[in-house]
Length: 345
Image (cartoon, rainbow, N blue to C red; front, side, top):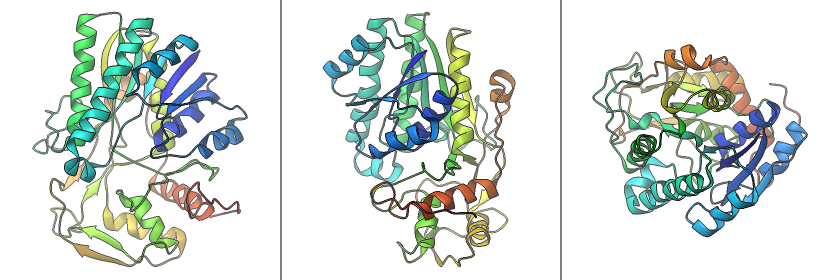
C-alpha cells in the first residue's frame, strides 16, 4: 500500500514514516524542507533498511501537487505539513492561515480529483477551549486561543464539511498533546531551527551547553509545585497511533477524532529533575512571567483511542527523557553536523 506523508522529514512525520515502513507500507514523502533536513531520509533508510520516495515540494504549489498524485498511485495521505510555532503564529497570523489552511485545501482538492479519499490529519490539543476542565476528551468544547490552534480547528471543520458533501471520505483527526522523545537508535529526533519553542529541546540544549539556562514561564500556577503540568507523550507512541488510525480508515467511512496522550501529567520542574537525574548534569533555570494563554494543567483523556483503535501509550517519562538525551548527545547540532558516538544512558 502506497501512502503519501506530507511533512515526512519533520519531527513527528519522520518517526511515523519509520513505523509505516516497518508495518509494510510504501512511503512517499512530500516536504519543502523549510524546517527539516534531507538527512532524515538517509536516517530512515539506516533504521528500516528501506529508503522512502522523496519529493521536494510545497502544498501551496497546486501544479506540483497534482503531479505527485498523477505519478504515484497513492491510497491514503498522512498530513503533517504545516507551520507549528504558537508564538510565531501570533506575530504572523496571515502566514499561518495561508500555509496551514490553504495548503490543506490544495491537498484535499488533489486527493478528491484522483479519488484518494483516506486522510489522517495531524491536529492538536490546542483546539480545545481554555475554559474546559482537564482531562480533555473528544467532546470537550473547542476554542483555540491562537492562530496556530485556529488553523488546526479550521481544518478539522473543513474535513467534516468535506465528508458531509462526499460520504466516500474516511478521515481521522488526531489531537495530540506534548510529543517528546526520539527514536531509540538516537538517529532521529527533534531538531528545531533557532531558539527552541518547546520545553524539552530547550532543556537538552542547556544540557549540551548550547544555551546558558532554561526559562520557566511561571511558578505560580495552581499545581503541586507552581509550574505548569502537561501530558507528555513519546513520539514513537504517537507514531504508532498514526499507523493504527490509518489502518482503521480501511474499515470505515466518516470523520473520527482521537486524543493521543497518556492521561498522566508532569510539571515543568518534574521534567527538569528527571533530566538532571538521567544526564547527571545540573540544569540552570530562572523563573519568568507566564506566557499569555498558558493554562495550569493540560491532560488528555485517551480512552476513545484505546477502545476504537486499540492504542495506548507504552513509554514512561524516564524512557522519553533517555531517548531525547541520547538523540541530543549523539547530535549536538542536530542533523547539520551530527556526531556518531555511542551513548549508553
